Amino acid sequence: MNSEAVMSLTYSAMLVALSMAGPILLVTLIVGLVISIFQAATQINEMTLSFIPKLLAIGITLALLGPWLIATMVDYMQSLLRQIPSLAS
Image (cartoon, rainbow, N blue to C red; front, side, top):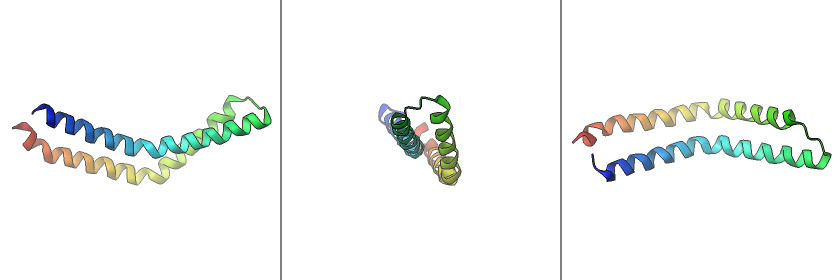
């Protein structure tokens, strides 16, 4: 296994991780921004006001994207397992 193969595997793993985490992080960012604007406009500084909506948004996002996330991870793992014979030599 040479350094080019290691770099290729690392790059593909990072792309899969980013594509899986991206939608969840984006939803959390948008919800946090909306809640922060609301808190600034109303001058309410309650920590649970920002935490609970983010938690609910993450839960809903995971419920909606769960099948896609699992399919993406399974496809990536299958491709890794298929590459094992070529990486061993």
